[in-house]
Image (cartoon, rainbow, N blue to C red; front, side, top):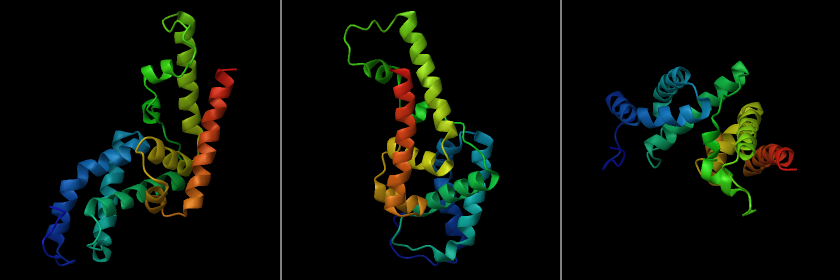
Length: 188
């Protein structure tokens, strides 16, 4: 539906609601990855759609509808987090740190990965990573997730977060430093 043959009228509210309905689920999951709370993600999805409807007249047809809607959703979520000074509850899965990756992180072939000691240390590491992610400022956390989970380029993150590429680099550097701190404490 997004590839429209001719440019529709921007005041066509029926078209907006059709496009919004078609993209609502994707928007919800995009917000859910950041906020990690289903009910709040549903509320923010509805709020983002309403904000998009209010800005419908400003939509540029050379952009994809979902890209535009998703940017509004991310901004709505960031605004909520900043306004409410809330911290996200992020699963360690966001970092894509699966069991295999955690075990393969060690380069020593002599480690027995099934020992209680190793499994205990891995559990402590994952808990520490999760805590560190939760303590990151929302802007740093979102940049970190967009880069390392969604694999977005710096340019795409800058556009999504409406900030300069240098700001994105700074936020990612801060996030990586925080994560490296966890590894240095757990592997020394």
